[in-house]
Image (tube, rainbow, N blue to C red; front, side, top):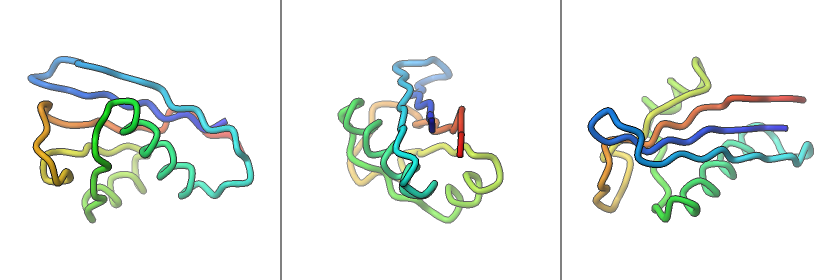
Length: 90
């Protein structure tokens, strides 16, 4: 099971959160990450954010990153989307 926790944060308060579970063991880790982000954005009714170098580096080192207004093409009504892997099984 691959689980990712997503949180919308505004003014240091949790606005919404969700846990996305992916149980397809045939997918690569990268595909699971992108699928989880896509599912999360669908659930939050958001456009998918753009992965910047900063996000890729944070995610590689910590399995966690924050998507801010710089990552979104549209205006957002929150400060950031926190995206964190909470469980990985191979």
